[in-house]
Image (cartoon, rainbow, N blue to C red; front, side):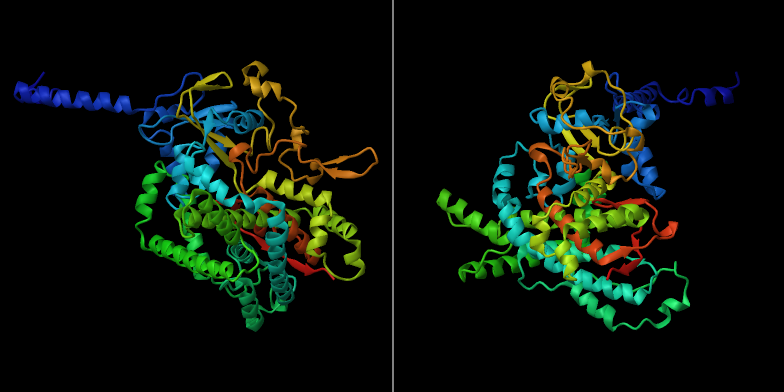
Length: 583
């Protein structure tokens, strides 16, 4: 071998022995450290083979999906089908434990409802929210003593009394502004489609803000926008000069400072969900001017509204908002503890703000999906409208829409079925999260303490056929509750079929059956969605009034695709409506 070849083959040969030894040692340590840092799979659970060849794990593929404009969250729901297994593992961040993805209704239901001591909200879920609302109970583990105190503070807000005397009437009254707006838009658009998401987003914020905080200094953005639309000339938008499928463009409805700040913070929570380290993301993101402005607007709004609430309380005014109820609860707690009440505590503020956030984003998203389903399936829309008119015969005969009192007192099984099917097929939240609080097992696999569990609530056993699982692999509590819910033909589980939620009684009447099949849109157990009753009430009222007043015409395919985007919730990429007013 030549001297030149020797130099190329042995690059350290010409260095002093000590220097060569140090370099070789450093490289060896780095090599060993790299292999030590590679993902360590749990035995027996499928995973992506390429993920264990890089310290980034599956995060490399997820980040590539994000760069290409795809949906990182959708990746999780595809993994169990990809591996043909109800449970798979994934590696989301360097030097971290694998997470498990479990796609099976029965085991998910069991974990949420009966295995609370084994599984709790985990650090990743807490980190997703704690960067924005650290003092809201959603950002706390169940074992956190503050969790119980916070739930005590808000426990009045889901009682029938509050829902029927405060929440419901405000939902109904604010809906009238929205109906007026869309009647005006239907007239101006002349049968052409127009964008709907901003109108729905604004209307639901108007509703939840007044329910949460009271009238105060609140102005309905929907009412203000209606005035803008009414005063704006159509110009070249005249319906006769364009094709009937060409969208009619209305002036933009600019959000006020409260909605703008709210949206910025909601987006931050949604963005954190797909970050390898959500807590670190929030620390960096919260330094941005837009976030500092959003936080300042949040505290300004809450300071102002709490001051107004104190004035109402001192004047002996009627309790008419979530804030009023929470202030009364705080007075009672303070008296019991022998201290002065505190109305501007971090818990008070974050519970109020979280109440607004949860009640707004999920309702807006659910309505958008619901109207898309009605436009795409004219049979369901017609059946729903006929069911409503049969249920409210007095309103039909008197030429009016149903009153709030009529809506809450009258059972309309098909309406309940439509709402449930919207939430089942296209719910605003598609995945639930838990973390193993102790060493445990899932489907016969050892799950170490601290392992995060992702529970998709679409896909296998929900909207596609379930995996075949040996009964002996299920937990004892799952086996003993095998028939807790009904089942249906899985071959059409992905289709939008409200009738699957109806059953016929002995007297041939149809009733709504909430236990007809797999459904986890609101989770279950102690960490089930706190606002479930409010969500159902809001959807029932709004769907009744919207379908009563409008027909939703078919849309061209490009305007009614069911493509989705992920923010805090999973919402339609595009939401258009083609309205005809029902006379």
